Structure formats: structure tokens, C-alpha cells
Image 1 (cartoon, rainbow, N blue to C red):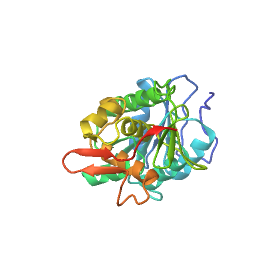
Image 2 (tube, helix red, strand yellow):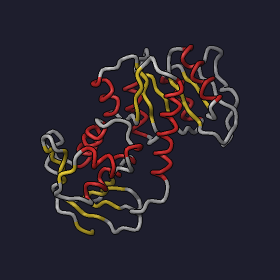
Image 3 (cartoon, rainbow, N blue to C red):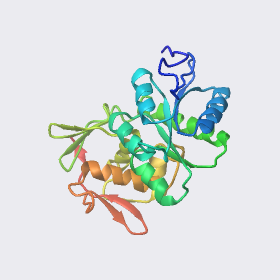
Image 4 (cartoon, rainbow, N blue to C red):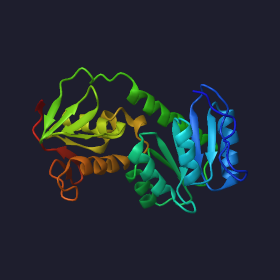
Length: 257
């Protein structure tokens, strides 16, 4: 696509658009101008196109006008914070998201993953690591959009649902339930091994390999997101049960639909 060199906006806009290039296009949203500038210059030198935005308003405008391959989103910002923006983006798009934050506690990282982030980095960080994380997430995205070996499989039925590997869509009666790449890979692992206890290491390997998922704990987050889409009561799951000290077990009978 064609990328304008500069967004036509009012003089104090903090949105900067990269020039035209076939390189991956990254959108950085951070209210710290110094960080935006540092990351923009570094990533541009490492074969990325970079657009920066200072807040949610500029982010939404940029995403309306241009197409991006990945979003780097700061958690703590004035106005709409990163978690709220992540929820908004994830409700409308499957674009990969890496969250940045000055907070390093596990609970903050897990909340970010729960609302749809694909990876998480705590400030301060080495820009080289961020570039490596971006490349890893983009490889995962590329793999999920490549021809899938499961595409030739028949539709799979379980507990009133029908999973179609050809379209990666989950159906419950007339209702279509969209799945992210991670949720789809996890569900394929479960339906392929019903009524068998699968530990986190096995699920990491089955869900397109360890490189597909940045944190071991993200398996728990993905399970939680999947439960919210298929369980009658996600707080009291009956389809994906937790096995204490062992992992998870998918309880429904599975058959070709």
C-alpha cells in the first residue's frame, strides 16, 4: 500500500507516518515523545516502517487511514490507558499487540494478556529486545495466515459447537464466534486430544510451538479467553477443566460434524 510521509493534521499532532516501503509497518502509541522518537529511529534503522501516535485519538485516526502489521502500545497513558485501548482494538481487529509498561508485576502482565495483547515488555527495556519481540510476533502472525495443515479436515463438532478448520470459525447454531490465532490453535489442540490431561508444556508445543507464545502463563490466559467464548459459565468451566498440578482436560465428546 502507499504510505503518506506525514499525516495532514493540526500543527501539534504527535502522529508521524513512515514513508512508502514494503517493510512491516509498526504503530507505536506512547505519550512520551522521547520514547516515541527513540523507538521510531531505532526500528526504522532495523527494517521497519514506523508510525507514532501520542494518544488513543491519534491511534484511532492512524488506524482508520492506514494499515499496520503490529501495534506497540504503552499501558500507562493520560486519557484512554493502554488496557482500554487494547480492548477497543481487539474488539475490532486481530492486529498483533505488544504492550509496554513501567510496571513489572505479574498481575499487570497477565491483565494485558487477558485483554488481548500478544506480548508484554516492562520499561526500561533494550530496543533490540523490542525489535526481536516484534519479529517473533510477526513470524507467528505470518505462520497463522499461511496454509494450515488442518484446513483439509472435516468440521469438528463438540458440545453444540461446530469448528471449521477451513475457515477457522466456531459456530453455535446461527451464531459465529471469531477466534484469534492463539485461541484457534489452542482449541485445535484440545479437540485433537479430548478427555486427556494436557500440561502447559504440551499445550505450548501443540499451539504452533513455544515460539508462538511469549510467556508460559499466557497459556492460562488463552484458556481463560477461550472459556469466555465457549463455556456456559466461564467461572465454573465444564468443557475445559483445570487439573490441579497437571494442566487442563477437554471434557466433551468430539466427532465429525
